Image (tube, rainbow, N blue to C red; front, side):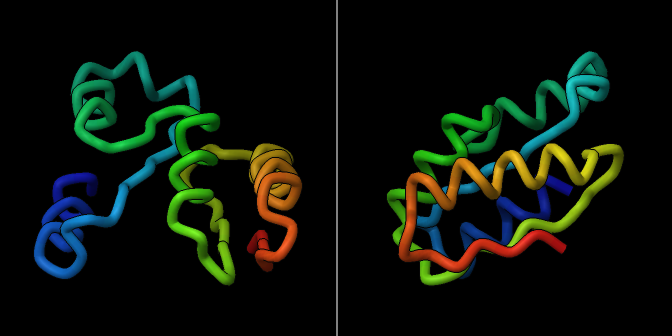
Length: 91
């Protein structure tokens, strides 16, 4: 999945940052850990800074795998605090 996202980014928006959030359960898998090392932000704090730099009008968070909704809401809250003019939705 990360390879595909990076390929699309490289083709369409090479200056865009890529952030991937993964549950701590999957980070122990060597292939997932290696893939996460290739993105621009692999922690919530790094991801939040990446979003701040992008200065979006809207951020949409979608569940993926075992990420609980509470975690998505926590992330949305951090983004709303950091970017009060941005619409942040959790689906």
